[in-house]
Image (cartoon, chains in turn orange, purple, green, brown):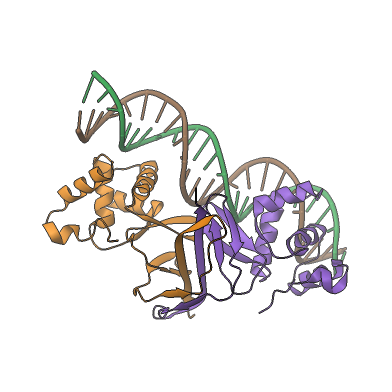
Length: 148
Length: 148
DNA sequence: ATGCCTGCAAAATATTTGCATGTAA
DNA sequence: TTACATGCAAATATTTTGCAGGCAT
């Protein structure tokens, strides 16, 4: 599966219409706030964000949007399959604009999530799901810290 | 590495002295509350608990302990290496009495963590840690839900 | 015009902390 | 006795929700 938003900018030069179309396809009205957040998220390469960080970035960019709307928008994007939730830190929720199958580094000193750059990870010996269950996702989080 | 608390009960018949010794070794005074919580955690087999659940269980067992003390005690045990924190759900922190290397199922419908019963999981193609970093832990979480 | 969105503030939830009291050594 | 532990309540942090007003269709 390929990320829906990939290469918005390079494929069209202007990205507004693309974002609008994608939001519509997801059943979400292309409002000013959603377009602005989507642009920040997908305007250049893939990203990992927390709600707080995205809200701060919006403020810096002069985009007026409430923190509650950022939370709600991130959840809507996630429900629409445009973002993937990454659970690495119990205190904070991260969203990844890369919705394809891949895994993560978590940099413990900085509370930061980074994609693992290769696709070579293979997990062997994975057991069957418990009876009556099916596997929805396999998450691999490699926690790292500086050598200090 | 073997869990410090394993087989307390079977190796001695009474477990009080063991728990006391382990707490002391960890630099923690063996108080009534800590002994009671340690007994609940290690008295029989390995477990996964949240602070809230452990507090509820204590109340049921007639052990008087405040929720704050449960939180603090779990953190102390974790810092002492007696528990491992498992991050699977952003809304809740789980602690695993099994501190050895192993991985987890997360049952999404029930918000419950279960050890993956085999040791056969091998992860291949794991990349190097980013420059200047070292890997502290690799977590594999297999999310499952009922077939519905 | 209609119904979905947004902002704000308040609620809900999870966890930590300050401080007076209690207890182990 | 002395330092560390506990309980309580309040503080903190994150995320969600209710509601009145706003905007997309």
